[in-house]
Image (tube, rainbow, N blue to C red; front, side, top):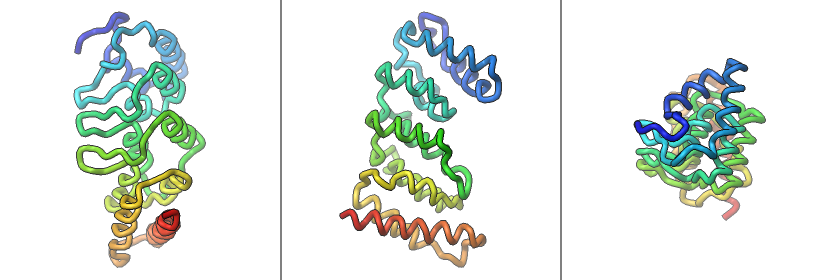
Length: 200
């Protein structure tokens, strides 16, 4: 990948953000990089081999200062990777990898940042799935994520999308769901979606 004018490549950012989650010295280096972001030529063109931009990366690592700075630099939250997954898709993917996940205050802050700066929860990726759809798909993959659904409580979601999610969850055979806690998650999610439908 072509170097930019302060000699930082995709892998440099990736390594910094990954190690920075556990190393305070690296975190200080991240802050130094953030302070120099405006000096990076064509920063928005820096991409991974699968088309991720730096905002996708920052969201994946939940690095709020980095996310804020990239948004301030004009990064498009609805910019997609090679599969047209946006930063909000990445955000939801992160939250739906574990069953019964409860979003932290950090997760909620990132969600608000993405929404308030133009993130579209209805934006479809290459496979026709929006970030909201991805929460439903997590149930199909065996991850019960009711609490992630509740992040969308006051967010406008297309009626057809809600109906599709509702139909999908209702089609899950409870006989195939082994854990009672997962059954409860599905029931609560169905109730949530039914309430969302009432908005229409």
